[in-house]
Image (tube, rainbow, N blue to C red; front, top):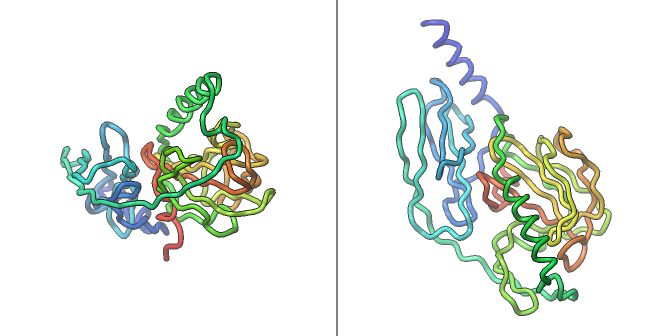
Length: 272
């Protein structure tokens, strides 16, 4: 066996021996399609959806692509493009149906429900900024087993169809932890802080890059304890629970983003 071939095999064995627990295959709106790309011994393939790079992770001797599926996706197949040593191929991923429940909330500050012209200009600017953040893709292989970022019960699940003061708004894009103001918020997996800010809707917010398009965001904080560019190990303190931005009371809103789209954070939690 040639030395180059042997090095490929050894690299594959080392990579797939890592302690990754892939998220469950949940090909529904807001879920994650875990796509088997083949054996991991012949070099790492790449995968793209609509031109956007996907995370490709080695697990149990095989490569897997992770595709985050937007909440507004219709129940029809999605197609990804895979490139490897054998060339380029297309894979079709069927998408099923998932119905999310409705949640009705009252917001005392009507401005947060019906923003004025100056607020709308700020919101548009902030959205353009965060949309750029969501497209970030770094080469580091992410740890896809997340710890809980805060203590407390889960008060609002991902995907809820939300109605504020009787007016329908965007679905809930994260997972809420009911916790008292000032409670500690920790990063659930290693990553790099890529943005901090005080936004109209999400209040004091921290974005963390875990690698290959897997990002996380922590919102409504009362205090931020990190800075952009800072490398974090699992469990490092990010900040403290608060009620900044559009919030009905102190809690942590936690969003997980994969290939530019928010997905259900619970898919990364509580796996053996």
